[in-house]
Length: 61
Image (cartoon, rainbow, N blue to C red; front, side, top):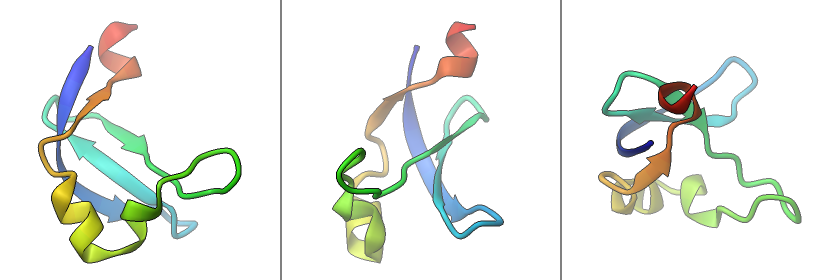
């Protein structure tokens, strides 16, 4: 189920986590070459993704 991003925080390991409208969270790591998300490394990039839809695996389960 697609859910909009409402914010971000870092986990205990320093990886970025997207906060979703449904209350769940999802990691949004920039970990080349497996995951290319350079936008998550800057405040401006994260701000642009507020409202972006992510597939919430917990809501589907």
